[in-house]
Image (cartoon, rainbow, N blue to C red; front, side):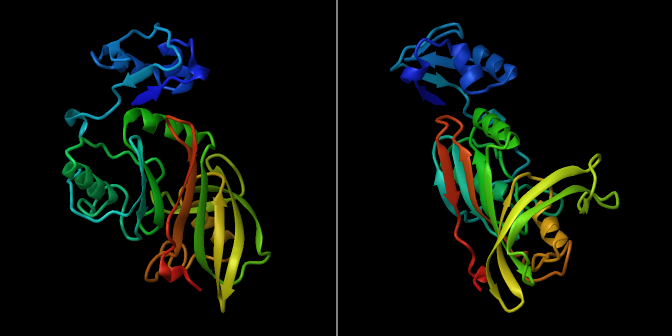
Length: 290
């Protein structure tokens, strides 16, 4: 990770930048301190008490090495639709029916397999770190951090509400009113590790909130834009069921179809290094056109 020291950072110690600006954990800082090339300023190794000057270049050894690679994830030559990429993050448009991570019955057909192959071909060590996670049936934007530090910062931002997510869903019927807010509590259903259900109270349930707006109708179907405020498992699927308009093709909570008609259209988040607000948007599959 390379950080150009701007005027706002002038006079700070490296330690202040690591903890306050980058939000690194104590363990991450200790690891950098132990690495011979962990903390380098203008080409020279420095300690965390060193003060920086505007115009300096700070380099941190946060990149993955061969020893970090998860050998349990097999690189597989699967095409990937890359929307955005820089030195620290990667955004892809995941198709429906592709799991994000390997699991029982899915060892060679996941996004992780595809990206491990993509970077292996470039000769770059790569550890798969998905920041947001989509159900295998859901298509759309998935954000991946390309190093430990970026993953840590993005994870903290996601947890603290620093992300804006936008989905499009094709649902049964015509929601009335045409826009609104859905608030429920969500909990595990029937002791299942998969199924969830809406509830009216808290513990052991978790509060969930989504805004929705109908974009257009066609016969007995509606295209609905959903902005989840919280990020509970199956939140959008359950919330649309809650107002009586389940997503078409939802085999868990409604009726099976060719696919789950839910698409993660866009993601907005602060860049883990520059703090610039990044917005990425994926193309809507043709099957959503009504």
